[in-house]
Length: 388
Image (cartoon, rainbow, N blue to C red):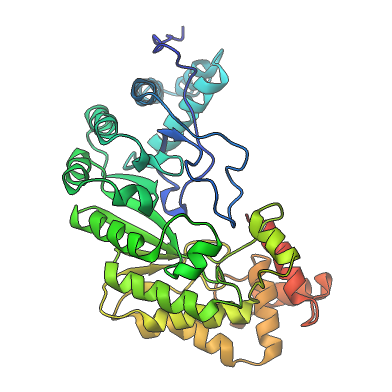
């Protein structure tokens, strides 16, 4: 018989937020806040129409304990001989409410992935009181002492307001990686997209994270300045990264979903998106401007044109940029074929042009979609909508 745990007052069950970084695919998702406290960036529609709220600390701790309970139940069931474990696992799920089902499957998936990392949701956990976040982190470490990494998204504006002493407390309590969506280090771009932060605050926040001994992932969004500010976006963002020296620089190519403010800017002629060749040129300028840092460059998103643009600076810079330089010099017909192959998910790297099987699939896709240089920009924009 399934045991029902006592619920905290007002607790409506285990919750899952809508998003996580690709690098947190194996992590347990622990929802600390709901939605985004800023929610004004022109390029983002994820939380539009949703109200931001902070979950009570005791509710988050209740989630932690619920996952612990189901993990223990699953482990016990899996130790039974023969088919008894499968029958027991099925019986554990009978009669569970939807939130309990989410907790059960979160526990099952996390157990299968090794239970090494936890990601705190949603968009900006660092906006809550440091005392509350420390309490959550300490509870998490107490219940799951073998967790190796606890990660969160955060805004630079929020981190810049946290004292160095409180950042050190968060690090000591177990928060050891933070993802910041810098997107751009150019004030003109940041102001236009309503990021709610300037370049200097990005730098202050990034250094604060690093000084606390917490790993830092900063995100750069090629194309966010449009044709109007492409070079400025690359140069100023690289300059900010050079001052911060983050542990990771993650590439997130701009895509503009219908309905966001930036899409309306495009329709009105206020913002001119880059095509893929221009996006590649901006990315190359950004990478070539990085200097004096030891960051790891990651291209871990489906929207990026080159998945293989990864490596450790400064030693790997030539290898990191080589695919971009090659793409910009190959025959236009090969460029077009690669764009179609990449945007349909057939290719993941430029070298896939030399794979006869993959190339054949890409050639068929080129014909099937009737892509030419005259319509490739509109076609690419439509394809990228599917991955947002």
